[in-house]
Length: 280
Image 1 (cartoon, helix red, strand yellow):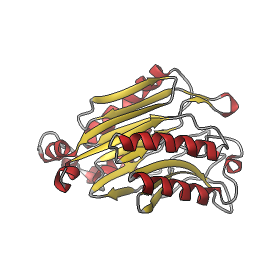
Image 2 (tube, one colour):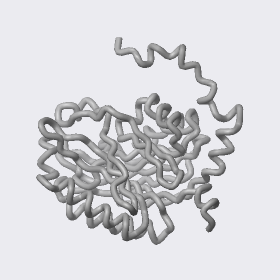
Image 3 (cartoon, helix red, strand yellow):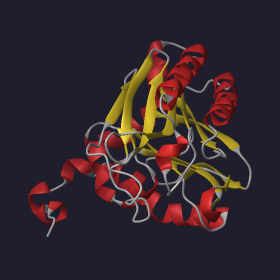
Image 4 (cartoon, helix red, strand yellow):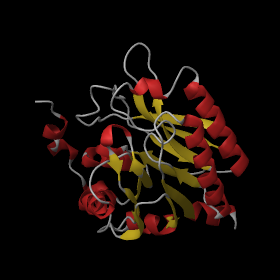
């Protein structure tokens, strides 16, 4: 495959995974198994669920990633990404002293840490345990631009639009979303994620943790990949861990964005949208 052809497509993997709270080494071992499988299938970007490294917690989350744990996790995932030649999106509790920790998603490529996204919109149940980040951000890997939204953030359409306007072609949505059956969770996601994809002409790729978590929380196993037309490209629904792989046609996305009737963002009227950014 030539470099030009490589830029026109992108092979990704979305991992539905059980992350045991506090069992960082165990979780990293499992992530490495999935990343290795993904690399064998020619995947370039592997996305793990929200807080995949540390597990999810609403009480004393800082205890799940002890002193030095963050740096060790970055080092381990960096060696993983370098050895396999892939980019890895991994969720972790990131300490912030003084004060509450962040819910973060690390972006680590073969050359090391690219950046960290800190969740900006916390759910009502998370606000007592975590602090929010203050910056939306997109990442660029070999001319592929993508954004990250974490779980609850997918309910705020402005985030997706800002990321699309910054050049994002793909939005990765790692979740740690409990409650309900896997089918109910998928149906819930499709009520809003299809609109995020279609309205902004972006690929949407989402995955959830799976299995039992702390305080009686249960995570239904779901992952889904949507095209920029809002249609489902592939999905997984079930109670087991799963690797969902898809090839994204970035050339086709380019064609949509050049079409005067299929790409809506150039026709926005931001001068009319003042109330959207009002805190009143």
